[in-house]
View (tube, rainbow, N blue to C red):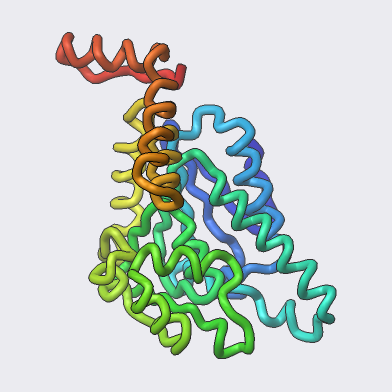
Length: 264
């Protein structure tokens, strides 16, 4: 796996777990065009060949911001065509993240505004530091969410709450995100990464093919009717029947030991 990116730090902190750190602290980890290209490239590589990656944690460098959204200094003075070209990069980044079969945890360690909020929502679930703040601020800038916010936020907090947050552009705290169902857990600032890593460790200990298939099936559940979703679930389930991991899981259960999954 490629580990050198201009705007990202990629670390395998322990077996099967990769931490992706947005690394533009001088701009509060805001997206510039290069970060969009870097994230799209990273998620595409994981899509094509997950290798031994079983869980991804995405966070921001430093303590002030997870991601402040798009870098408005870079956008200042852009022509309409330049703006559209840059946004096409962000669109590809968003789609690549949506397509990632490996579970993603957002460890939100500070402000997650605009595109930063959308990036967190693009993860499979969110652990937020107590000091974290969220906002979809786009309507204050004459635009609207364009990296999945109008799709992901209603799924997380409900349609009426999402409309309120997007249309008022008002920020909200980590505890509110938790109470509304957007954040799975609120952690002390100092323990955020420890708790995110603990969750990632649990995911990584499970059968990777099973985890990826389950993630896909849950995703389909949000896009289709019950019977069509169940038909997908059955097909996803059948993918595992012939795997070595399925046989190892049953053996380990009967032998009263921890399974050793290989992803085969």
